[in-house]
Image 1: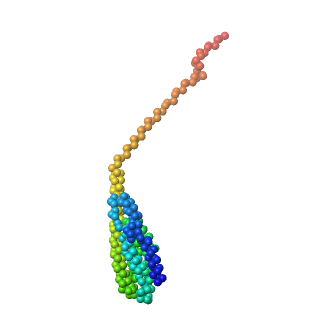
Image 2: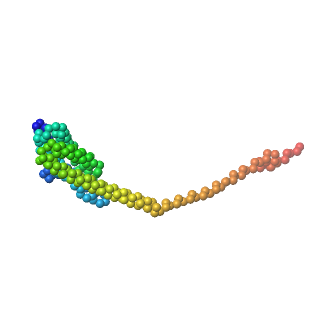
Image 3: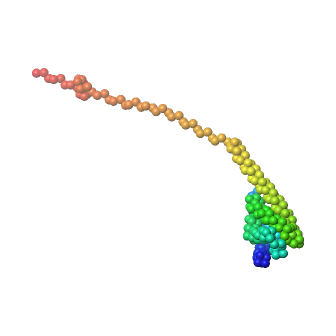
Length: 245
C-alpha cells in the first residue's frame, strides 16, 4: 500500500505540471513560435507551422500516468513478476516527473532543429520499452481488466511514437530546405561578386615619367693675361732714356 500511496503522490505532482496542457493551454508552445518567426524572417521562404512536441505527446503521456496511478498491484499475483512490475512502474513515474518536462520544453524551443528533439525521441522510446514490460507482466499476474487498460494505453503510446517520428521527418525537411536556400543565396552572391570583378574597367595607366634634359656644362670664364715683367713695355709706362754725360 505504501507503493500505491507514493504513486498517487507522484501522479498528483505530474498532473500539476501537465495542467496547462490538459486544459488546452499549451504553455511550452509559445517559445516555439519565436524561433519559427525568426527563421521565417531569415530564410527566403517562411517555414510551415509545425505541431509542438508537447501537444503531440501530451495525450499519451497523461494516459500513461493515469493508468499507472490506477494500478492495484496488491491484487496481482505475488512473485517476481509483480516485483519487477512495481520496479518498472516506479521507474516510469520518476522519468515522467523529472526528465520528460525538460525534454519537451527544449524540443519545443527549437521546433525545426532535429538535434533538440532527438533526446526526447530517445527517452520516449525508452518509456515505451519499459511500459511494454509492465504490459507483459500484467498479462501474467494482473486481473484481466487492469491488463486490458494497460493494453489500451500502449496502443496510444505506439500511435504517439509514430506521430513523433513523422514530426521529426517534417522538421528534417524544413531544415534541409532552409540550408538549401542559404546555399543558393550564397552562390548567387559569390557569382555576382565574381562578375563584378570580371567586368570592372581597368585602372588608368600611369603617365610615363618625363625624360630629363641633359645638363649644360658651362665653360669656365677666361682668365686675364698677366703682364710680363721683362718686357720693355711692362706695366704700361714708357721707359725714359738715360741721359749721357
